[in-house]
Length: 306
Length: 85
Length: 131
Image 1 (spheres, rainbow over the protein chains, first blue to last red):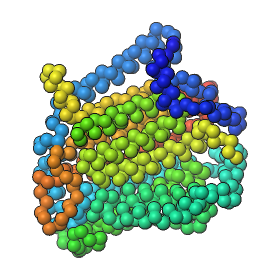
Image 2 (cartoon, each protein chain N blue to C red; image 1 turned 135 degrees about the vertical axis):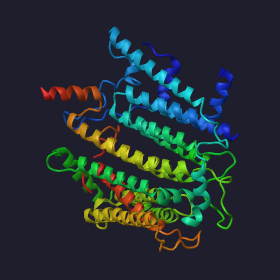
Image 3 (spheres, chains in turn green, orange, yellow; image 1 turned 180 degrees about the vertical axis):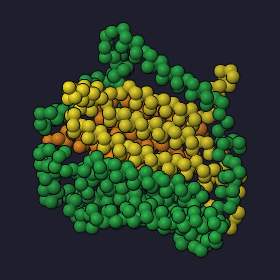
Image 4 (cartoon, chains in turn yellow, blue, cyan; image 1 turned 90 degrees about the vertical axis):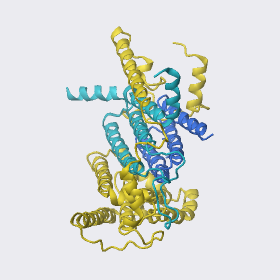
């Protein structure tokens, strides 16, 4: 089927087609080059392209596309009945939110109202989310841990070669830039972490930036440099310790709140760093855990061990 | 004026989502996803949610793109980098 | 509802309309693509569409972001946008990253075993190895 001219131009623009690179050589027989999968030579999802010739496959294709279109029309028809966007009767403005906004500063002490909600008023949900992150990291470790049964000879040789090249200081540019940038990135991550209750930020964004700094260090200086201060044992201690600290603080809050006991942790002066009770320790715990998780994702995808 | 800016950004989101399905190689898909995340981060700012903007920029663009690139590299699908060593 | 009024309402609720369209594009991509990697990317698009829908439910025109600039002035609901959907979406973004990482780990293991990213080929080779 001949494609129209505008479609071909759109194709070229999306692909960024320039002079073509030479075809990458397949490593071993069995490792596939990009040309051997059936969808490699054609553009677009295969159902739109068409794969079979029979009436039944054509009918299936048409039916699938029709189902998606009907679904889209139904959802758009539902949007037509939603309340007006930006009006005063928007769904998220009710008496609960009124309580959170008006009493938030004197009950919790943080000037960032979102941090108020996610760490104190609905703190248990955020604890569940940290547990989901922990579970995700554990699942990735279980799947990708490299032991003798699932690593082949070529993978080991590749890893050895890349380690040897790292030791020979291949990354001159990256090494020099990382020497200047890494303290700045870590400082920025710590700033966002510790200012979670005063300005936008919080544990997750700050922790991701700290994890990014560790990834930069591993890329620029090689994995042996990072292992000198962040090895397997320290990773486990920090991760599990952060979650346990978070659990203890949440239990304390729930116990004190459920039994009507007075809160002994001082709220401090709103607007200063040491305020808002337990929010700063919780942010630090969450940030450390997220940083460890992001770095673990990086190393387990890259080499199969921490 | 703000409405026009918002409509342009959202058209950009939908175009990114459609374009990511139509690429032959897999590396442009990741780049389109990163562009999508950046536009989404600006939309969070327009919707009065600065916490989400910072988190989306750090996690959605930074960490997600790194994860995708690492997965691609371990599956030898990044063209042209296989004969480096 | 007649057509002109419908189009005006859709244009006014532009974030919800865009979120619905993005969700459908992501869903169609996830169903029709044969490549496992693109399925994971489409799942990310679907997640972001839902977050857009949630956050646009908390926006009020003319109000400002929910961060108290001056602690001495008492805060009222008539000044700030709603902070509640932002908290929900923050959780959602982190769960989405976890899910993406896990799916990519599964894809990598599948590739190592079957040497293909196409789901038809993987099913064929799996059935062949079962016989």
